[in-house]
Amino acid sequence: MKIVTYEVENKTKLGIFSADGQWVYPLECFGIEYQEMQEAIAEMSDSEIQLLNHMSKKDPYETPGAARIEEVKILAPILRPKQDVICLGINYMAHAEESARYKKEAFGGERPYAIYFSKRVNQAVGDKEGIPRHANLVERLDYESELAVIIRKDAYCVSEKDAKNYIFGYTVINDVSARDVQTRHQQWYFGKSLDGFLPMGPCIVSADEIAYPPKLPIRSYVNGELRQNSNTELLIFDIDHVISELSQGMTLQAGTIIAMGTPAGVGMGFEPPKFLKTGDVVTCEIEGIGRITNPIVE
Image 1 (cartoon, rainbow, N blue to C red):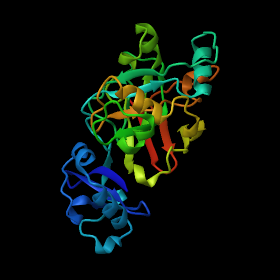
Image 2 (tube, rainbow, N blue to C red):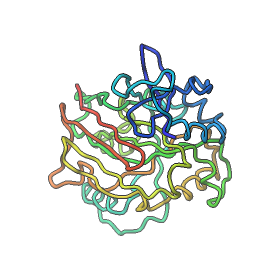
Image 3 (spheres, rainbow, N blue to C red):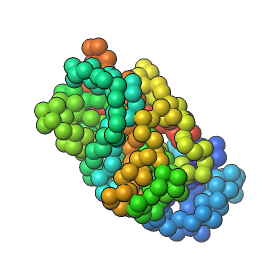
């Protein structure tokens, strides 16, 4: 099941992509009445997920309310997260190396503990929507293609072997970053949290659709140029570890978004760096989930 938030005829709805990805079917046509994604994540039963998996293969001409994908506006699946997004920093070894090189720091190759930070999101950005340049504040604008894990039910003191049972699904995010703001303030929160800095989507793929743990090609492109090209199996700290470790000391509520970090190939990793400018178009994709494409706008 690929569940989406979309807009049609000035109404925001939940739906699923058809099996071929060319249509959107509203949940309501299957008698499922969730009004927004947070509710669906927390309340959707296994039988409803199985039903939607089956219904995604249905003929669109026999599905009331079905719309071609080009006839609707695909929004970020979780428009307004309940809490800050939990992010992992430097969670691919090759990215750790390029980050140290950019900051002119020695890299020892050791990562005994995960690096966590949070990202405030007033409203997530959907596919084809603009990422604001914030030129009055930012000179070094960067992109980060990432796998995001969506928590299905409240998680507290979860063991690593049980972690996968707390996952609703996965989506793609672009952890847009203002490198100069990060450096200036000597922490990441402000430089990661400007308005429009969380493109997300195009959907949430239910956990049952992807073999666990996810071993998925992950890429980014800027103006069609391949920049990042890796695989989610190369995470330093995997999903089991992250869910278990975080839940030892705090409750991960249903709907929590955990961004698992970005691989090498971000703008700051090039010599000289390749930061974003107005008019650039960034695409982030993960095979099996989808792709989001966003222009940089003033």
